[in-house]
Image 1: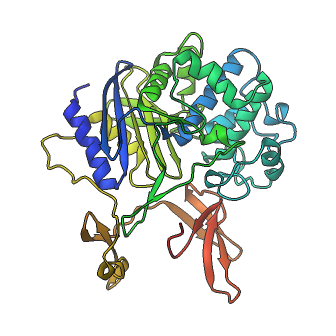
Image 2: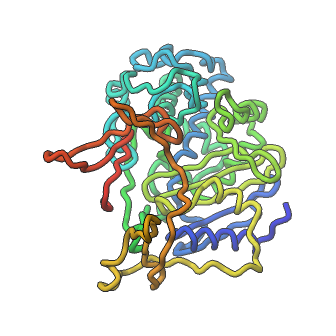
Image 3: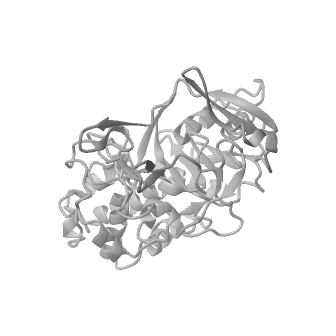
Length: 420
């Protein structure tokens, strides 16, 4: 590892300024030990908790592999052997762990990350199998619902709720005392930033209940560093290193995902871990299992930074001698003469946006756009053919007069104007 503390801080500061992050904290591991921590933006320090979103899935996956190593289950068991009332009885536990089951990305109902959670029986009843979008094994298709079901599998096998198992079987042995189910002070407030005005708005901290195994937990840089050290080396009271290496092997047809672990290819090799997002939060945590070098970064922003890219940038470190990126500060208000100018404009056919940023009116071109999802339009429906919404239907909701009101795809709602 050749990066320096000055380089790590420069990379963190660049992410905060360029991404309009209210706060961001980070840490770098060297040979399994936390070698550096840093902060940027408005935060009291690295001891503050942030929501870690889908990094939670790595803990759920370890619980599943513990059961496998104790002969309580086989990864090729059909889900119905453990959850007979599930509508996805035929998919295997291995397919759920690797997101190759073909089930839909999100559970039926409102956006689960921002809604009061439901109990497990309600989740199982609402997701009866009709939401399947692909045949099992056809493609990698990320499913939050799948990990909620895995959490219930281990709960039934152990005779205890998922959170108790996480606390007793993982956090306790690893000394992760600042990783909790809900927020514990000091903790960050989840935030979203108005795209054009730069004003900051609080996001809810919903209790996701049945969906908790997919993304509920809160943690800190130090605790996630402990988790990464475990993913690299194992722990006699949690899971052997040989099983962790098995979890890091890609599962076909997924090339960048193993058994509950994401694979991230960097300059020096493959890192394992996960990214995470919840309303108001983004997180990333990855480690090289061969060297123990790794990185953690947490921010209280809904958008603003590509979390996998942030992990790689922070691990390598920025150039401390380069021109610094101006630190971003949320707008307290927008001048009246500016407010009516914000938004999308066109120069001929070329789109650009005007936004209020650190007291200046800035113009940003929208070309070339970054492709997020691609949809095929047929006479009967609009269906995702690439991206996160692969196989999902894009629904067009119309007003009484027939005009388009909003779009919705697997609980993601798109509107013409900001909704708070």
